[in-house]
Amino acid sequence: MPSAREPNASTALERLRVRYPRVAIVHDWLTIPGGSEQVVMELLEMFPAAELFTSVYDPAPWPAQITSRPVHSSPLSRLPGAKRHYPKLLPLMNAAFRAFDLSGFDLVLSSSHACAKNVRTPDRVLHVCYCHTPMRYAWEAGFMEGEQLPRALRLALPPLLAWLRRQDLAGAAGPDAFVANSAHVAERIRRYYGRAAEVVNPPVDVERFLALEREPRDYYLVFGRVVPYKRADLAVAACAGSGRPLKVAGDGRALDALRQQAQGSSIELLGSVSVQARERLLSGARALLFPGEEDFGIVPVEAQAAGVPVIAYGVGGATESVLDGRTGVLFEGQDAAGLAAAIERFERLELDERQVRANAERFGRERFRAEMAAAIDRALAARGDSGDRRAAAGTTRA
Image (tube, rainbow, N blue to C red; front, side, top):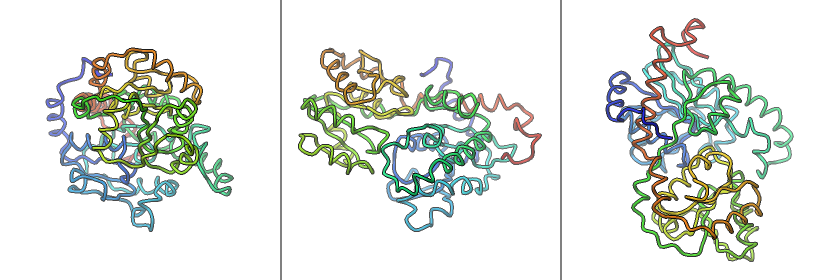
């Protein structure tokens, strides 16, 4: 939540830019644009001269804001097929990030949901980690359910995940401070890493969506990557069972399974859509369905900025952005029946579009810059003039 204590963004940023002329921004991988990459783009706005470090880099989908600056990718990026199959390289990424030389920088900002936080930094360098989540696949039992994995990999998974947890926990000792994208993630950081985390919700380009005009029709909408944990299958089941029209916009490894599930129904699977098509879909949607457990969830905020109510699973970041009964509906049972009941409840409500849009305004980009700048300032103050809190342990943090 935005806080009245945060300074003016431009004043705080000018001070930070003077204090930290050489900034490194480290991100897990730069392959497909998503919510975590919006954070990277905003950090680049905050520090326009920053250099990027990442494990695997595909320049094709990125604007000049990224491609025009130094982007240092690891040797993993040169492996055949790395740009498409980067998740398979996860066991090698810890070593790849720890091999980066960041000694020439004054400030390191890692944007991490995997290994980016594990970079080594000299004592004198402040390292603030913006944590999207600790590795969910490593820490949360059941997160891999629904994934189509070869039998050999399923057998090898328990020891592999245990090894990843050990690496993840060791890497969590490195940053001077953690910033979480939601209170939900801050609790995970406390539980898994034993570290405190300040909460700064991600930046959302609400201004663009506030300008969209509403032309609501009958259909419901699912938007985003079609991967198992996002549970688009629940939206398909709930709408197919009740005969309600549903449009699913997005691509991903679970799309083929979704096609089989939707056979014989009027549900439309649109695949990847353009920015313009996405805005048209939002303008006409009766509500956005959001049945997965998300760390924060930028799409529900974008939908609300466009005046579109959100029907979301009431666990995780959606509970911090959706006001139950006022800007949408939160439901408890993560199954098709629970979602169907939530849709029925929504259809009995009369929601105020102005309130729906106003709720989204608190997650704007300027707010993110001000809160993030203040969090960096507090991390520096907590560190003290003596340098790193682990300075006695050596000159480079493990």
